[in-house]
Length: 277
Image (cartoon, rainbow, N blue to C red; front, side, top):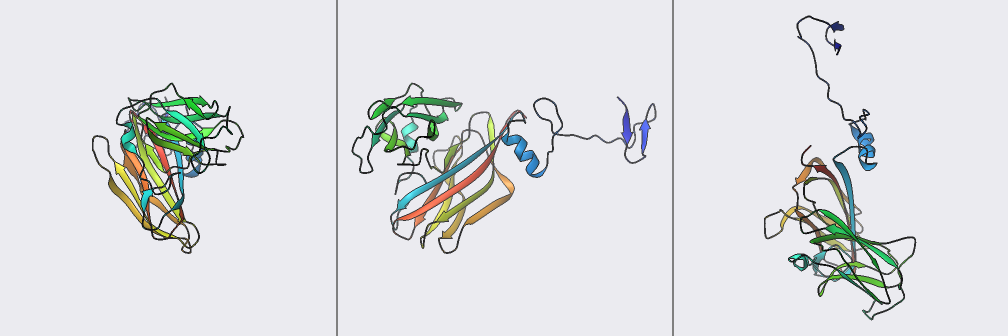
């Protein structure tokens, strides 16, 4: 292979290999050289063109948290996410109810997809077809992080997904997807947290804490914190150096609110990189 010295502006033949420089470039899965810097590289990752790299966009909202309460930013008010429901992996069940919890068949026939991880922390998906006001899955889950309705149908009921007797996912009426600011890093991958954002509706204000439970540990510990208020606007933090989160670790974004019926949101963006890269 011919080699060119940028320093000498000359091609090398049999002369001594001084002033030879090695250039490393990023290529897509077909071997084509791609832009490895800035937004162009992120577009290639999102398009699935870079083997071993993937993106995760997680967003959550708690509808109306009570004053003085602390809870995970997800579809259920005043509640910390029930991670212990998955101490033992298992299949999931669905029930559909009105907003006050009464069983309803208004969403009979709707298809629901649930995304999560199996007992080996590998990514899995289950598909449910609601019959009447219920459905039972066939896939054993160790974690879940998203559920959504197939097609362009807006759900007329609260779609409640449970592991045993504990609700672990909810699609609120008309949303067609869960809004939950939690995530678990799959096996064989490392997560790099790129940025996070949070808001409070109206005149509400809250303390927002990002908790991480690293794999092998029994409790969560705080990894980032913020103060946010409705009049103050959006809190947005871009990590100059991404936070590295190893495989099988759990993330849980929580709010402690100081205003009644506060709607609080949280968003975070992650790059997932295969460990063998």
